[in-house]
Image (cartoon, rainbow, N blue to C red):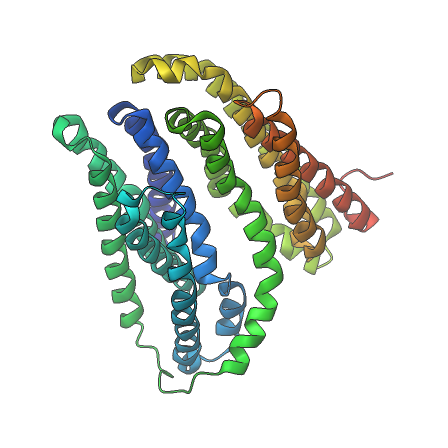
Length: 418
């Protein structure tokens, strides 16, 4: 019993340290780098994050279920088939992604770092998902910490003691080194599991079937994540690279809310909602929904109040007048993030019931609404058009999911009984 408790506590501690590291990294980068450099960092990070879906195609949503259905001796064949698909996707999309630099959407000076980081992040992401699927959560958390946390701590420490290292290339080198270490740990752990079945032929029929299953959710994911990537490019076009640095800083602070909610609330509550619905436990489903509602709203409101009070002194500490001058931008970005967070309440309520269709439709609509709203606002308030567009988009998604949850949830499972 003690080892299990110790492993669970270690898992939570590692993930918590990773979140804290990512949260403070953005502040130290804002202090040590020029605003334009922070803008480039934000563009590259967002583009890498979006491109991961092209290389992975969300195929794990299918392969993980298939893996757990089969005997352990067949797992090697499943992983071999997924690896083959990954190679095919690399051949297709890596050359296409070079158009980002040909079209000058990203500066050519980061082309090498982009592809190195993209491949490392994708391989580590898939290894982490695989380790979670085979109940190796501690190793999955360790990989996450190496690729997202430990390098952030080291690079900020180096920049603090050595001013000559305050350079964007140093940041990307540290990120790459962290990703490489994470990859080595993940490969070592998978190899130690001594899986069999690697000699099986690649099942292309199985791969095609999996692509069909994953495609609908992938489209929805690409649409929603597209909002969080297009916003940076659009803001750069409207306000310039230096002001984009302020946008990246404020977005990094605001999105810390989602990191805390994902790790501290959503990950613990939504599995219980799924279980309660499958077992037809109406009281348990209502209790879980109420807990999700109260905790999400309380944390979101509390985070927003603390952020609004603390942002002023933090910007003074950064000693970059540009950030302080753009502080009004933070209020709208924070509001958009809170709307997005609250929208996850009906999202998980629908997901627990297997109601994927309204989630998919609302995510696709979010990108369309964001484009239309931002285009409308830019005619009058160009600097605020992007965050205002985010607010409108996430408010519409919140309403869509809330109405869908009320309409599709059977009466006994609804939170408020008539």
